[in-house]
Length: 204
Length: 204
DNA sequence: ATGGCGCTTCTACACTTGTAGAAAGAGGCG
DNA sequence: CGCCTCTTTCTACAAGTGTAGAAGCGCCAT
Image 1 (cartoon, rainbow over the protein chains, first blue to last red):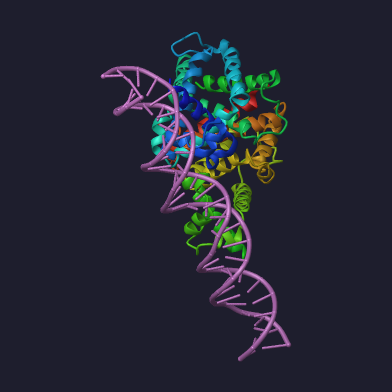
Image 2: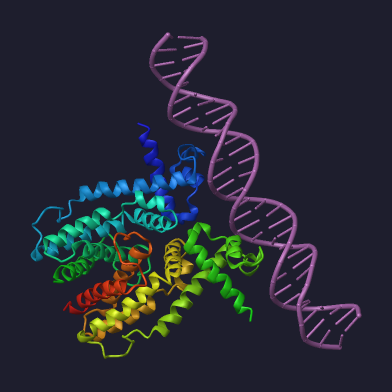
């Protein structure tokens, strides 16, 4: 399965991206990170653009994969979402967020780097249907809760949640926040997300 | 006033950063953008780190400047903030946000690039007391509204608002959003921000 | 074996970038 | 005027980077 090699390389690239930023993402750096012979990355991704596209695709795949696996309390089409379940839903989302902050930190950082990169390279945006899934999920949830214009509200909701994540993962809001991976962090996130959910579901 | 030259160069650097990302930020690119002779940037900022630090400092200065000039409806220490003024406050914030999306887009993009960069270069974080002012402002506002733990809530609030901004400025949420600079955009932002403000002030 | 064919590894090379220092001006002052 | 200092401009160069192609190698069918 040569697929393997692609996965190894793109995963290494994601970590390079997280550790050294878009500037540090070079063929040779990926080789080093993956502990593969020099030139390997260059052979698999002949151009830099190809490498970045592969990374973006990989990120999208990973996201899709564990968005499906996560089984968030709120599933698209599952109408069992009403205001009573808000706290449960918030807890589920908080769990996912907490994972993005701890184990998934590299992926989160790489993701933001790629999002920024997609600004000047529109071809990436088509691959990055990023958060599109989350947006849809949020929209159906809000629709089930009877919110007007659930598309718009859903987009805003995930944008806010993403803002919470960015703030923490970029270390901007490092002042006195509980360390990721702890129950304290999950609790804080749960109440924050619950606040958001309530806000976005309550609006008429 | 040699200060002039510094401002010109760092402003050019900010636009380079917005247009080509952290990877495109090179001494020569800044020279070109500023339409100054090759080597100028290199003479003023002998190392790349110095250049980045200058950019970050400039961004912080600009932010400070128009945070002071903006005279947001909610001023620190001004206790005239109660729930009745929420819509006015939201409109003010929306106005600022809209400007970040239109005229200030380059600065916003540069800002996010630098925030990501600060992840691997802690010395930038000290300069970047970024959003610290906004956070304080939000905190005092929430404190005035009688919110428990206003620091935490304020941080979360500005993180969410920043998420809204990132979503739009990075073009991720380009689906069917009103173009920045229009009244429609400001309206949509106003209601979204108002939702957030109400959510964060209402919680206990 | 033997030759062909994939994948893998290595090497070469032009070009960009960071950085330092030399050259060239541009005043001020004796 | 000639000299000195500071700013600006130019040049040089080592190191890193993107990219292409050559060389090596395992493997299957003939």
